[in-house]
Image (cartoon, rainbow, N blue to C red; front, top):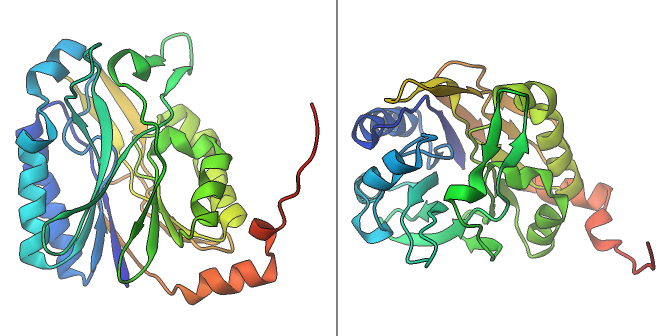
Length: 276
């Protein structure tokens, strides 16, 4: 299976973002990808909760989801929509940061709501409280496809290795990590932490990312790190997209999963222990 990792620089206008995303997906299909992946926040990247609420829709009314499902069906591809911000029925009004796996029929094969919220103090001027606007998911997901079992995660999840171990032990051969990774933490940790998750699990790690400066209509904005990565089960970086928007390709041979796990079968060596 050839995978195409789409790297984007979205803003806070879902209509404009969709047009660019569709062009990139078409490029991935033209390059032979049967599995195409987009980053976290494919439809909208904004820090303004009022602006988000005015533009987000419930899943069944989201125009980005509908359009990309249709595009996947027409192209006959598997499509991971890294995540969309969608409205929920939650009493507190918080959104969901939801990843979608779309089958070649256009049907939604699996959904995953990001479990771990990015509530951090990156610096004195960069403070994030994702949980103020988004409610965390509660369920880990491994999706069955004809070409692989896929564990679904989103961005900040990558700092919680127990989730990845659980997915691998449940059969995942590929784990997806769509991201809008902060440029400061990305420079410090992105490559290392994704390689670690691959080595620990013996999975392919596919991490399509947002990149560059993301302007907002209220005059603010943020920077993301880019460097969409594909990492092999033995830890080798297979592709690195750098910092420009575009598509990078990787050919996946799942025999590499079997070989890596046979060499170091640590997934099967868990032992009970006490303390602390």
